[in-house]
Amino acid sequence: MTNTVTPEHITLDPTAQAQLFTDARTANTFTDEPVTDAHLRAIYDLAQYPPTAANTQPLRVLYIRPGDARDRLLTHMAEGNRAKTASAPVVAVLAADTDFHEHIPHVFPVRPQMRDGLAADPTGREAMARFNATLQIGYWLLAVRAAGLATGPMAGFDTAGVDREFFADTAWRSLLVVNLGRPGPDAWFPRLPRLDYDTVTRHA
Ligand SMILES: Cc1cc2nc3c(=O)[nH]c(=O)nc-3n(C[C@H](O)[C@H](O)[C@H](O)COP(=O)(O)O)c2cc1C
Image (cartoon, rainbow, N blue to C red; front, top):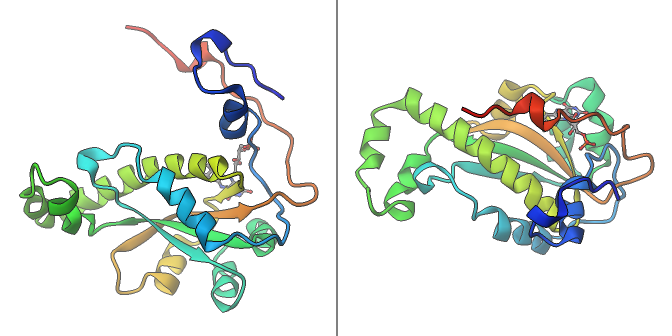
């Protein structure tokens, strides 16, 4: 275990800390052990809760299993990301729904009129969708780890190509492609250094 956190200030169980944070790694190969639909639903059961602005929840997820759709996805991945994507039992394309405002009367009933304001502001709406969906991606990655699976997030892909291929005539815009499953042989690159507290923190 590489747990270096300060024990008296972290209330989460140490095993959970290791699973979610200190021992969790980015996987670069996967076994062919399947990931069931029930497993994918369990991930969302957790990932739905952390906060977004006005509770808007713009993250959308397209799951792709091996087959024709996965082969089409591979053509849009950067060369160095193809083999690892081909080895995963399921791949998630995480996207921002730029029409998230349509759900506002349901998810933010205290101010349903926000829907109309955002309907008239497509530029601001897309920025809000991308920012909040990106926050949700962080939550989602931790939820996958909580479900006992490893992730391999990849920004190295042609976003316009993926949007044409899978999201034509929709308001979804791809942000990140993530492999998930059980780690395979030689799954890990060496652990890279993290910035220390004093480098990333200031007090005012
Ligand atoms: C937004 C994002 C984009 C990434 N893009 C790629 C990628 O295109 N290809 C790749 O091999 N790894 C990619 N990674 C993986 C990171 O390099 C890796 O998560 C990081 O070095 C930490 O590795 P560790 O979890 O094993 O410590 C990406 C990770 C994130 C979060």
